[in-house]
Amino acid sequence: MREKLQQVEDLRSQFSGTFARFGTKNGFKGPLKTILLRDVKDKEGQVVTDHLWFNFTKGFARMNLQEGDTVYFNGRVKEYIKGYY
Image 1 (cartoon, one colour):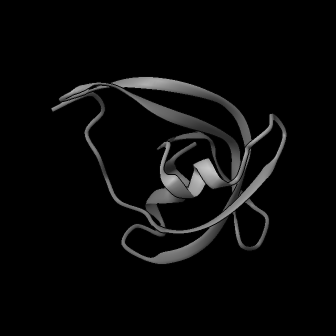
Image 2 (cartoon, rainbow, N blue to C red):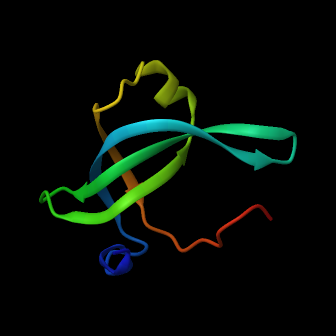
């Protein structure tokens, strides 16, 4: 389903997603907190991917997220390599 994201690679755009849960990933100094957004949509409301993981930043911390909350954000689509490097 990420083919739709490839179509807008390197372009800054507005997206929204539904908060599902918190998670963790391995970092250089130990585990890092993450959040999972499901059904990520573009500004036209079209689903561009079924899920995306994000680092749990101060911005997300201020939101007091609850399961089912809709999160709106601006971002630029970039290719990445899965895993810790």
